[in-house]
Image (tube, rainbow over all chains, first blue to last red; front, top):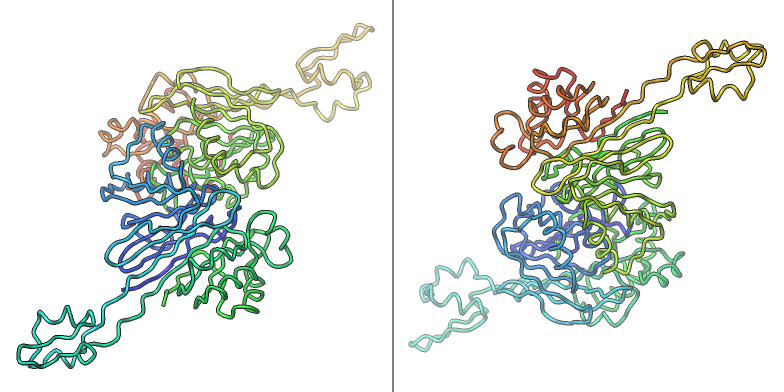
Length: 304
Length: 304
């Protein structure tokens, strides 16, 4: 099952006609996750073909407007379209009250349940887990309490070799154990070995999300070995002082974190509106970490 | 000086890629007014070339999300772009707290003053007035307290006839009085008549805004004689029962109000997403009030 990220918004605080405020949609093992929800996210979802009624989890990193002003509108639209499935929202403390006040003042009542998990920006813990995926949060370093997230596929089962399905000693009830890597000892004394009947399990991948944050090596262990890392790169090297002053990062700094965390791929976004695009970010980051890319709204990336 | 309305959003509660949530920008006598501010309004302003730093007044009709969810993002962007001029916001009671809470939780402080005028949805009064324009509010009939607005140009001065500027008895200090329609009696006994020296003043126009509202004849006196009336027309006649149940109007009902108020032109918006466009609204409305038009995002109308 695919593990894919769609960039819904890649601007810094100031949205433009080309870059909407931050939001990303992640499909992982058929779970549907929205990360951050700047103003206009619901229309970006429509534009890029994301069916938002299928959302299972929304993760909000912090309470600067460009990361959450679109949430109340998205929830309102879900209600109008008849959602009744429960939704989990992982967010900074205080956001539920803000959402509820805006709905209550218009006498609007959501017809679906929301399971809010409120964070203080200091936790390192699992915020969502089921049989297929696990989402962990960890602190970032920004002007307000901010959480990073990492979405893990759980370890996958080995796959049955097609040519072994006709093996005369194989019974259906053995398959589950063989796929788990366990051998079967028959009463006759014969041993059916998992390695003979199954192929290696596909690697379990993970996607780490760090926006917004100053350069902060402390976060490396939390994202170590991630398949793909999204790390904000608001500025290029020329504006490093500005990055420091505003608790944001440069492309070089994002690349250093990617290198230290030993990830396979780095995606960079939250690009300041002062730049025409992210080509300079990309050039600078690639000098340290070659597999670095800046993102545009609408881009899709397979996590593999 | 031009009196012009730009449609920034024309959808009902559910925004689409073609119709954004409700917002309109009005230029009148060089004053710049935003009416309602659904999610994404700031980007619609960019898209249609409205320089939002010049806004003098924002009018919010009511606290359903599709009319105000974009306000906090617009104010945040004004701050980022360095606004320091004072802003007047006329809005339902409770909105300032909602705006402030969203900003405060992100430790964001606006660097410009806002003069909030809070309404209960029951007032008929002047909410803004200077030497060139006057804005009045009046109640509408909706599920929550809702205000309509009418923007009046003040009575204009008569214009000097070019051919009379060389008249031997005319002195510069007479011009102001002649333009006000006053005659000048010279010490010689001669009378300089205003009607001889000046042309008729251009008509003072007005723009009335009624969204959202059930069909409600009580509002007619407040908008009587307006040059142009914007009246919501969420539904067509086929869905009249739905209009009644949701305190919205049909196109026919909007046309009846336009006819009773004796306006020159009717604009219809807040179109339900169930219709591909407003052509059926237009057809139905024109059967009662011929100068009726449905609006699309980006349309501009001169009020004359």
